[in-house]
Length: 275
Image (tube, rainbow, N blue to C red; front, side, top):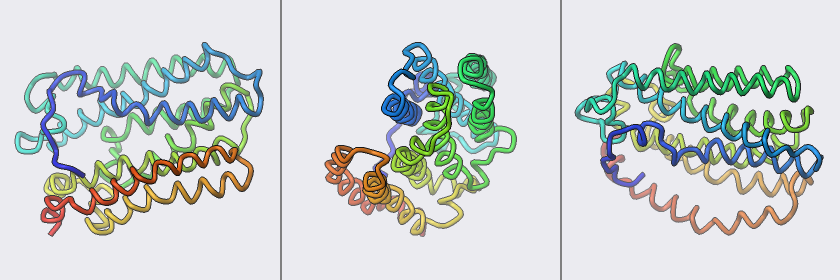
């Protein structure tokens, strides 16, 4: 929500490794829940492969988002501050596209290992994840249909910890989903924040993100809700016995929550853009 600063064009920015927490945290949640319920289920090699697969899916989404926005004329000379790779010619569009497809391909190969290790059921979750990452701005490009936040909530917030749990235990359980619910909202809030940051440029480019469709003020309230609801859900999850009471240490982050809410209210430039 702060002032957007230019970034250096190149593969590092195209891959956006600082966003990988969106994949790492759900995998860790599924792993910890699996270990808690079935300690013998932990396999270091399989865990590492799941982590790599999750990061590859996130990387694929990042790369294909850069490619899709450029091909559809959304990233231009006037608004390429966050994704300058293709607009400035630092990278070739086909190179970025092929890199994204390669990430999906490697993830699919890892999926074969998971099917062999835990069972064919993981195929359904794996295909959903690959489709979600691959079709974000390419093909059906559901980002432009206002479905980006819904996809992130379901795929990364819920199915990723569930899939991790299944691969490690060969069982399905509601536990990783319940424990992962607070994080699902937080992950979705990250994308909501991106949509609010890009509200003006997306509106000018005719992108139908969820925030763009509901308007700036409602989008801002949605952003606040997605960053607030996790605390309420965490209390319920602990009371219901899905997580230990020590999980409530997360409330120590309320100071950061307050700072985030206060900062978002001061996004004056975005407010003027919405008027």
